Length: 312
Image (cartoon, rainbow, N blue to C red; front, side, top):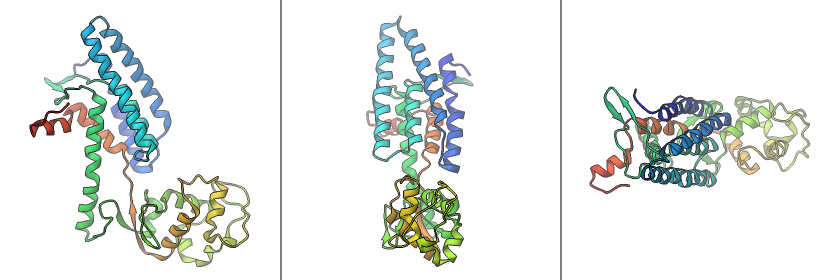
């Protein structure tokens, strides 16, 4: 492979993001320790290429415009998506790091082929990664809808969720798409459900088999996790001990309210299957978007160009 040293060093992002994507799919957890070294490398390479272009005024101006767009547009855009809840924290950090690491198009030559093949007029590579990722993310609801249709599962939520057996919930990520009143966008987060069960030292099967566990008087005096303090409850007005649980962990169960927790527990205690939105492990389409960008290039630019539209 023929490429400049900075562009070769940038390829470290591929295995790093690939590992993060696998962690995101399997656990929905990615350590923050991954992003600092990549951001530091990106800043060094940015300075390297900036100083190298200083002797060529035209080249430096073009580099500065592209790097400035990547840093001053893509980074705030990623932060904005995180702020309104469109991205998770790891997703936003990954986009920010890639904006620093890939402000301009890298150049590689493999077996006589120049990569990336399709480049935009603007030439901001982090924006190409972003558009590729968004296009891949938009395909996810279609995949869910087709899968549900093939399974004969037709519903108003068939493009955002799937029906699963309640017994499978302990090993599934996402949130409930329904409560006792029907479909809802504010269903119980399944991570919060697992936290509650661990805190009480119960399995989901225990909860479903014993209706007496709805009584807060059955709460353990020494909860297993995440607190080791005794739980005080007056035994009334708090079915399932939902409020006591959230008080004990300082209300940090992914924004879950006592009402959401109670509604979710009522539902899984009584139903055999429920609709769940799995949530998008967004680092996976981001990783694929990066690989596609490094090899093929900008998919959106190619489509627009093929349709005869002018694209930037």
